[in-house]
Length: 305
Image (cartoon, helix red, strand yellow):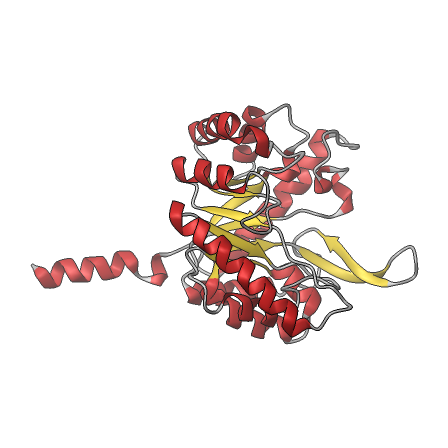
C-alpha cells in the first residue's frame, strides 16, 4: 500500500503533469465597461485566468485595493477564471501601498504579483549598483515571506533596464528564496536582447527561478527616427522561437501563469491599455482570438495543453 501511495504521489507531482495557466493581461481589456465585462470577454477568448492590473490607471487603484480587489477577485472567479497574479508598479518594500497590496493578495490567495524593474545609473559602476539592488530585493523578500506571497520581476529589454541582460538578474536573485522574489520571464524581451543564442542561455539560467512567463512576438525594423527598434507583432509573425522555448518550458515542469502580451499597434489602443479603442470591437477580438489559437497550437505541440 505504501508503494502504491508513493507511486501515486510521484505521478501527481511529476513535471510531465504540470502545465501553465494561460492568463490574459487585463491591461489589454481596459476598453471594456468594467471587470464583469472584462472577465466575460477574456473567458470567451479561451483564457483560463487573469493577470489583473493593480496600479495607477489599472483595473484596481492601489489606494482602493482593500475594497476593490476582493470584489474584482470574486467577479473573476465566479466567471470561471483563475486569478493567480496581479501586476503592480512596486519596485521595493518602501514603495507606497506595497504592504497593503501584499496583505490583500495573501487574504485572497493571490500568491504572485509582478513588480516593476530597477534602472541603472549610467554614470555609476554597475557592480556597486547591483549590490545596492540586492539589498532592496532582500528587503522585499522579507516582506513577502511574512505574507506567503511572491514578487515576480519582469525581464524587460532595453538600455538601462536591470535584468535586460538576464545574467544581472540571476546575480540579484541567486541567493534569494524563489518563493519570495522570482522571475517573470518574457521570451519576447529575451529574444530582443539575445536573438541568436543568448535567449537560450537566458532561459536555461533563469527558468529554475521563474514563477511566471510572458509571451509576445516581434521583428526588428527602423522606426520613424531611422533607428532599429523592436516592432511588436501578433504571435507567429515575428522572430521568437516559441516552439523551442515551449519545449524548454515543458522540460522544466513550469506550471505558473503564462501571460499573453499583445502589444502590436493593429489593436487600436488595446495594446497600450487605452480606455477607448480606435477600431471596431469585432476586429480587436478577431486579432486576439487568432493569437490565442496560435498559442494553443504551440502549447499542444509541446505537450503543455
